[in-house]
Image 1 (tube, helix red, strand yellow):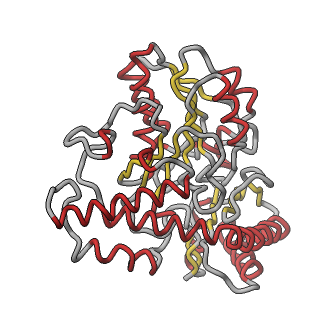
Image 2 (cartoon, helix red, strand yellow):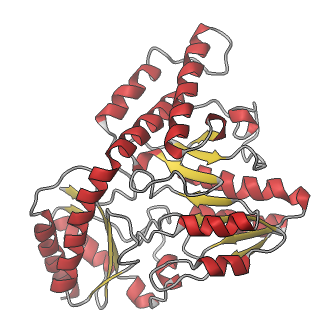
Length: 378
């Protein structure tokens, strides 16, 4: 079985499992407890926080551990906007291709707090023009929240240019880097807040972090004992924090080599599919895209049927975001890029992992895709 749905989740790395094992067994104390067992756990938590901060180019105190990317995005969008309400800032800027955790957080702020939301236009490849951000920012804008790389089509935004626009207007920029972490550089982008999720990097599910600069006011979403400097209450997942730090460091250390290798293989696969399957159209930006993502529409077929045919042939892929649970609606990402609803429902996404595949993998996989599309259309 060839697993090509790593954008949804990736297997746990053996090194990560070994790093977290002591904190699931012997060092099990509550890091808020003032005794030897608690202090040992607190020390491990502090070390993990510093390690994550180094990779993200932030200060140690900027790191808030969460239960994953969705919580990190909720804390960023809701927390920063709610923290700005007292200053009269009640305007949020996002794009229509964001992850559901961003879109739903924005909708919540709209419904319950009277926040105005502006969605920036994207081009047919899912890219945002920095000029459109400049035109959208107002005097009362509290936050700009943009996905660094899209989880469905793999398009990568010009984060540095967007950050420069936001910084000139003195508006915080939040980057959802859940998909880009481990594949793209995250330091020096100019963002004020960055979300990551461990299970895209090789940790168990349920680990993540929001890095948010100390100067940015954040209203907590979870209230209680005041952990994480009051920004996220709840007993911390020490083993999860260690796992996240370990996976992030490993991915960063390997990033240049792995991204080049996987990117070359993915580009070859894309070229073969487009050459062999008449119905195939690449979605997302052909140049500014994640190295491990290949996403297509196959007009005139059923995307679900293509997925089933692929699985019959030993290939696991997906139709887009795994977080839109149970939805059979066309992808909101593809619709925003101007893809017709009927065509959008034929989308199939292949997301490769970091492990090395055989040299002929692109050819073999493209042949299986060709067979599957023909079987699904016939």
